[in-house]
Image (cartoon, rainbow over all chains, first blue to last red; front, top):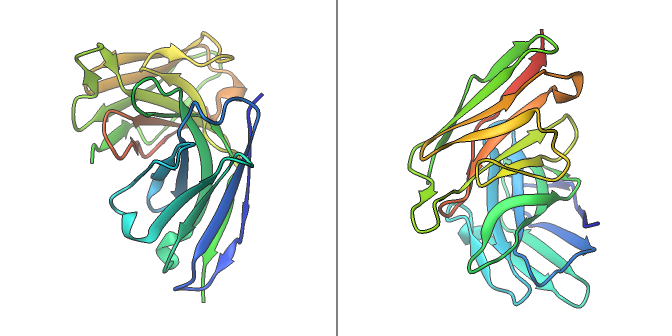
Length: 122
Length: 113
């Protein structure tokens, strides 16, 4: 059984850096891409970016300048950093597993973390 | 980006009746080389992450009851919940993964009338 457990700071001030980590338990870490997705009342569900076990990343162009996703294969963890946050970044952030890689990433999401509410407020 | 538009935004259906959720993509999500529609459906209940129901538009995820079905091709897709049960009350989302970034519909809230 695959489980994703995520954690990180839930309250940030404007201009600070958001940092979240997701631990993957069960299943194959290397056979998949791993994503971060956020959900807010205003923007709905928004894909942030992805990483695989070798550190290959892809980002949503709308967030690319502020986002870094990294991986620690020794722990089966992957992490999200987002710089210069504003109130518009207030959302529930999820980590998720993508579909099994065949040739390229298959970006539907079959396992999700529990979600972390991140609030940006002065 | 491909824009996903769902209709209606909400609907109320009597228990045992059929609920139909529609999803339209701004571009074709059918990949001609493999004849697969890059479209997924999710169910989300309050306080929970989305749960995958279907991928490739109509491939049912393990554990999803067969009274829930996904259909459609190209730009128009449908999620059908037959014989609505109380446990089906949720928000349903479609999502395309044909192009980067993957994008989601705004959601359709299904309630009991």
